[in-house]
Length: 235
Image: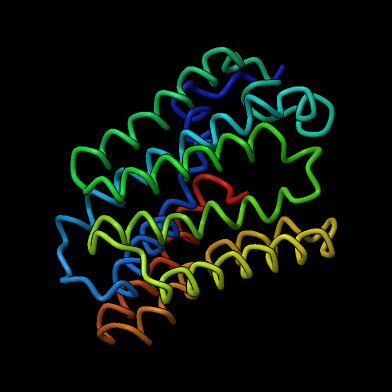
């Protein structure tokens, strides 16, 4: 029999931590597009909050998908018996709530409103994405809402320009999903690259709306994601 993975390893797989650099660059892009006074303190607080929400959403994703994974992905931590569905639900909702609390502690009320919208979109996607034909759109919306949370945290308002750039990110996620479906068996190679590519899209937006050095820092998220994927697969 194959020995069970350590619990910490199962948690990392459930949280899909390899994709976190793309979340951080989403935050940088959202704040830059808002043209707010740049503050690493604000970036760090928002990135921490959204990271908690992202990981919480990933726990909930596996918890809701446990029956499907038992048939098609039995190596995932829940069907493999390494983490119970109840524990995954508890951790997922706790991380999601913690993220909203961090936004509330560090940002204005406008950011909290966008954070609650993000939390609702995450839960809806995790709950319904297997049966909702608009699931990919909701997944993209989650990424777009990160821009809105970041912009509201830094500038207290989400401008039409931020909304337009958020819509572009939604479009990229829809493209990613379409390519993944078309790739079929090759998706295991293509999808990690496209996921890491989110940081390159962010870098392009930072280049357009902000200083070039910050765009280069944002582009580094692409490399960092690929490096993290060598430890925890990017899915």
